Image (cartoon, rainbow over all chains, first blue to last red; front, top):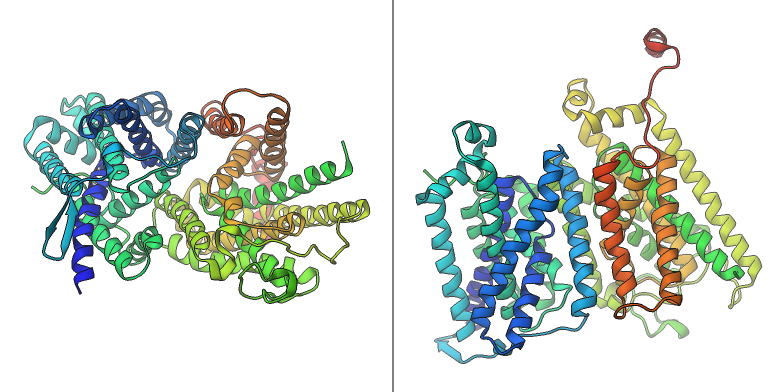
Length: 294
Length: 331
């Protein structure tokens, strides 16, 4: 029993990491209608940027901010230079999926000669272990948990209470109508790519920190868990992605505790299959994607 | 240029042509974005391997662990490979093609491809895990090292399969069934309104394409004599997509052209470059090959989405009247 309680603690940390990644992914999809398969590679690229900064002796928590900034700029540029022109040209949703897969492959292979195959890790990967009964977590893990919690509250506040958030929701619900109401949808979409890109970069650094060591090939795994959480919650729904992240984080860590950690992604995939068969629209089914409650 | 290199080139070309025709039937003709295509090739290869190999308790094979090991003679492993591809298409198709939107189908298949690779890579008892299967017997068990005559025989065998697959694909594309598929691809709602069942049509093409992909895997494993998870990572599917997009979606000649340009042409050029030119860090040229494949996809989708050889408009030879007459005759 205590192994499950311990796994519950890890599950919360996993859920935090997945939530950071999944919320960004699902907002890109909900507001800009783009299934961005390059998301995992942008995450890993940001993790490497933070790694090089970290190697210079800068604290990982500052490197994390630089990684997030890199993710924001990188995502913004990918959209401006590649996705947006293709979308303007009228490429179908399916065509855009192929485009983003090609972009993903290109990012990974441009990075490969630079970073190499070998796994790397941050200087701060070890930190003090704190015990709460059966749950033992490191200071890093608690910081990740707190950080993710704070970011989720911030996203909620952004979507619910700010003009930008309302404009985002309007753009997600109906871009043409939003434009006709005087919302500068182009600038809103730029803002979305910057914000979700920052989330993506942050999630990449956090995921890399949480997994001790990482390689160039970790990107695919990052993408799958984010995708699973987003689809589970209902693609395009930030709150759904948060719920999905908690479910997937807890289930994968518990299964890793009782079964084998090699199959974490397989369990996430199994959840994905069940959702696709039984409830393809996700847990929070609502048309109009990123519409927040109320 | 020695015989072995020529045989290598021709057999790889044959396998890529078969794979591209199959992917074209699914992606180009029916509009199914099968990002898990390579899994079906892998299923065919693994099946052909375990059907032709002796049990893993045999003297030379005891360093590997795998199920099966049936030691069956030549044509059966290849047929088995095709059947395995078709059978695998049934459950995956039932999950993915029934009630998901088309872009969801694509990502579901991509995830399937990554996960299938992870599972086979980590689970050693089934198919020897990451190390893969080695010493797969060649068809008709020739003496090793194989004589040139056997290489010619294998090229001929591959050519026969290419011809067979071409014939089947041509029959499908040019038949009323092929017209229905194209109608579904272009206007799924309209085709449904005319009483066509898109799920059944997609399932059919998923299974046909799976069988052909399985055959291509069987041919490949018989020549390579080994098969491992690292040979069927998901980017391999992307190469085939690049081939079909570059060659021209929706027509078989375009698929063949694409196979010759991208997987065969591009890979040979980079291999030669890698042998004779020394620039950048190790693996720089192979990595740049992937970047180039990505650029091919983006470039063609942007500048020439119809590919090198476009599908062409299907019209009745003598105008609308003859079309009405032909259709009238059919009823």
